[in-house]
Image (cartoon, rainbow, N blue to C red; front, side, top):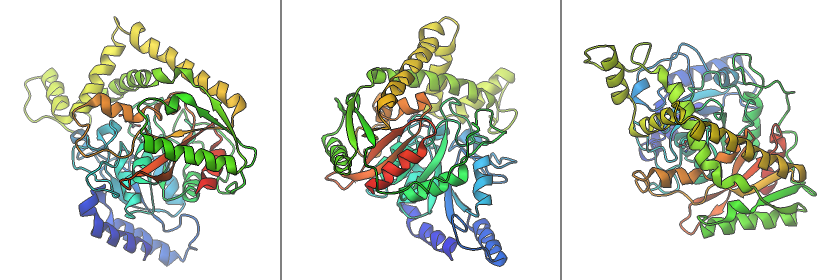
Length: 448
Ligand code: GLN
């Protein structure tokens, strides 16, 4: 019944929202019936339907990265997170729309369709996990998974009024996640509330020998720490996250959240993360450099799209990649290839890595005196469809508060903290020490 209810809801609203690339109707009903027949107890994620970003591999089911390059690609294996969710009894009902290869902040870079923000259909849902966020906000799925390389879980969560967590790098296996920038990518949950987020994190986290960057940590129950009691917690508020470019209504809403925490007995500590201003530049060099290398595998020979007419091998590569990749993906490949080329390596890529260390050290210093850091998730609420499509730099600025977290490998959560005058959701970002997701979840839970 639960799966059927969600499928009915998809039937009703998907025409308007457009968050889904593939509905797994029959397959999901079959899985649900199998659980019913087994007579399993309805607890935890048992029988709960979810949506999966379409860059996470599903055995026997198209996984397209919203790209023409992978339009007909069917992986022969499941990502580890999919296996884990299957074990928990959760049922996948949809593969969700995204920016092509997770590059973007509005989901408008999908080669297949536009996704609309459920709060206002003329606005973007954010990106790149826009389909994952919108499907949760529209009630089409109970929760979803996204991937976050520079903000792609938290920014759409903020725009769609849902909770989104980017876990510590290495917490959740990346095996089966189609790579964008391997040193930054991390899979995480998008949910209705913080408790659901903790439940999903319980299911998907943990060491995986198939991912060499996966970390061996002791397993925790992330739901056990949730309480309203946060007295004495030290919350750092970095001044760099409240400067020019921050929308006034967003600022006000985040300041109200700070007042709430003060009343609850938290200690609010004004802090500074001085290297913040270089984070976006470093991110676009590092992520594009890694992308140019990761995307070299799409050559039209091994798998994926192949151009129809070609004269020779080089011509095959050129045509396949020209036709298979969209504009933004090509822009990143060119940027990354340039930054890695021998004459410019030191000036760009090496420099960006040095900046990366400085940004990480900024956080380390603040975490000596603060338990968590609080900021807006994004400088604005959801913008209009088409508003920034022709201005990549304006689009990139949407991630100004989220990228430093990926650069540093630390965890952060976005939780809804209010609405602007147009009734668009505003997101609050809480940033934590590595592997201290339970602190983020607790402080987030207290605010709900
Ligand atoms: N919007 C950022 C980008 O375009 C972040 C993407 C992401 O986190 N996958 O690179």
